[in-house]
Image 1 (cartoon, rainbow, N blue to C red):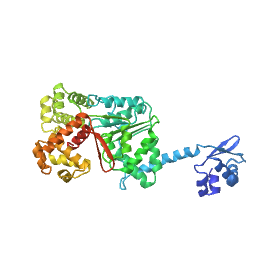
Image 2: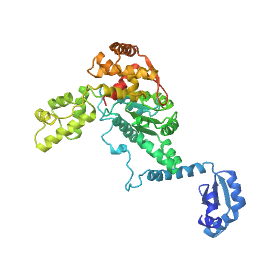
Image 3: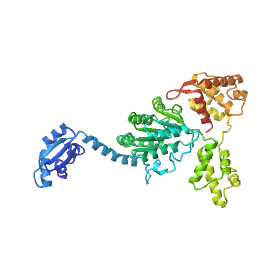
Length: 457
């Protein structure tokens, strides 16, 4: 209806027609769809002559005009506008000097090897694999969300993309996978550009939302609040949120208690580093994907030598294949020994007391000087005791050495701390403390395990 726009003027067209009306020509005449009775009455009283003149000019004869109330008109147009704003929001998220497309999280299609069918299942990840399969069978029905956690390189991202591959194949097209960092960056860009409606429309109208590296939300209260509202949109609607993190929900530092509670309300599963048999089968599967078949002797040698994550195994395998290709020799046990002679083997290592103290003090929000002092506030005492326990476990220092390094204390203090925590772990006692953002609760065993992992990173 260009004639109407020209007749009423651009400003009044934008206010009363654009996005608020819908025109249809039928054998009976011209039907003007409107969102409500108020707009219908206003158009009749102010623009009826303009509409009649424009219709006669366009069709060469007078047309009867009917006004039809369409309550969903605003919603439909709003959805169209928001969908268009999403692309603009993504462009605004680009750095000023960036010319090409923004760097985005790989889509499920870009990681074809990450499927549930080729995920190697073992005692270290059996529960997580079963949970992923159940999520595909009935998204959001039995648990919401699915929260997977574990150290780097144990298979969290593989399962994340495997779930999305399977759901896409089953017909769930509205799925998205991104890192918590990408979610944060897009949120900040939307805030700066005034595109929050488009941002929310994009992520709150999905069937499945998968977020990797959730621990990145630590210390970002604004993003946490936005993600909580996004998460709530999925609750109770038969849709699925899948999350992956280095830490369990309650172990993520500086995160809202409400958000941690929502994460914990679903199914929380932990993936552990692969055991020897699983490492062997992973190596065999990865080698076949690369078009190689390793002998049992080579498989056993590499699995015994590289005791770290799947990424460590992949690095060792890449080196093996590179050696055999460059030297043009068969991949024998002797060549495997030669190629991995100086390979950095990932194994649990002995560590130093300063590393223990730094990791523990950072976690509890105190200083190393606080640990060495005689101050007895709850957080400082808790940090001091756990540092003593981990120092005894992870270093070669005696009780007396630890006591002397921690402010010249008596060795019996260290001994008492170790005995106390052994009892707390055995009895499954929960430990409570307050950090910079909220009150925290963890079992003694989980707390020590988390701190142990932080020290050994």
